[in-house]
Length: 227
Picture 1 (cartoon, rainbow, N blue to C red):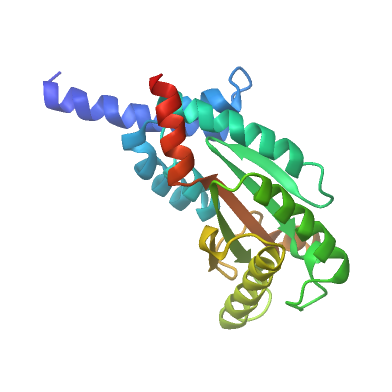
Picture 2: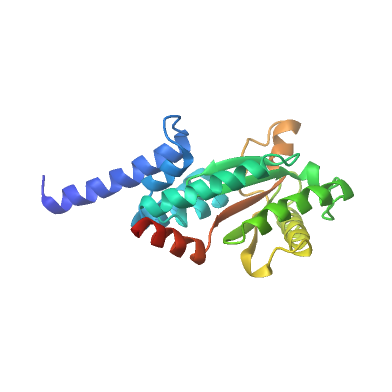
């Protein structure tokens, strides 16, 4: 095989294997080991590819921010601890992905029907989320709003925006620095399930958080890895 073609093939295979390991949830690897498998150079490409293919930009953001190598394993261990604390919060669906954490709240847990004001009950849950985030300050938090396919696309996009902003504001009110928070909304464009049953539609109405390392955490992990 020609050297250039072989190199390109090997590179594509490395991206494919990294993605497959993460999405396949390989039981033989710890989450920190999964972080090691994502190379720094391939992280952005993998993240963009996964986000597009899976229709999940939160997942793509986490994978795209990966540094990989030993430093990635160090970041993964820190995320393991944070994820365990987030798992204690009622209504939070917590998934460790590579070097980050994906937290999902169904909108019915946070909001009344067709509302974008955080319910009184949910304010307590989001304050608990904020406490954990404040205990681990060296991360970025991407807040995403999503809806089901009922109603017009324009209305759903607006509702997903208002809900994502409401969650972001609740985190800020509880002390999370605004500089750490990114807010995006996608309306009905990223369903996790077919919008064919009331149960599936309820799952598609959600707010997701993608939590991943900021520059400070990455630099500290690199220094530790080089010792």
